[in-house]
Image (cartoon, rainbow, N blue to C red; front, top):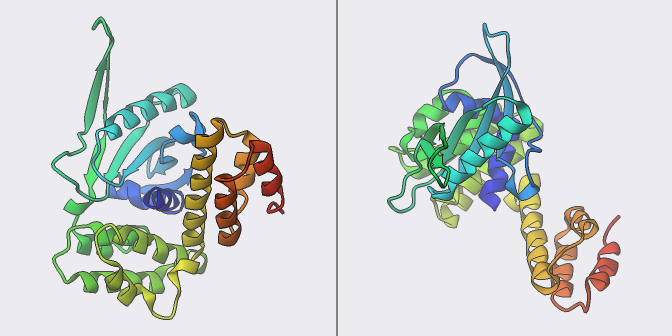
Length: 281
């Protein structure tokens, strides 16, 4: 989940960098769109509207970032393309970025689905970028700060510590103030897929507590919120919308830990609702 959340932050704040990674050039403007295409748990990672130099019309790009190569990615992309076409009336350009290898399976660049009787076929193709095949040095040399968090998972020929320190130095020097801490946090979250905690602490620890970065606080809160939801669903089947919205508004770790304990012991969903109300401002 933390990789998913970090990916969405990167898409929302540096989506143009990811489009350039997919080979799109001369992007002059872009913006993330609210991807309200399907149910909340089925949203694509990102939907961007962008314009190219010399092109009067705008375009849509659909981004999916997969932590590992998985077969479900193919189904996810086909579904997202169809839902985008239904909602927006256009077929988007699609980028699938796979962060880290695992096993022998590789995400393919196309999928074809047929009806049961075989009279109808739906074919979708897209661009796949496997991050571990991209040279880390090349990502860092682009000067695009949005690509820096991806470098720790790219192809590294230098010492890992050297690459990580270069990432930190580039963020320290080039990030705008309001994004600096979150860029460092996303870089460390992605890097944790590949490197051990001691190495990350030696590079990113310093005098700054990474656990207090806004994105890390949000990630930690989201994990606890989802844990509470899992407990409530297991015990009471359906969670009312007002309780879901209330949980999302609580970010203090102490309060979420207390609610986690209460969720496993409360006698009814109404009892949980009353306890939840005490923590909602």
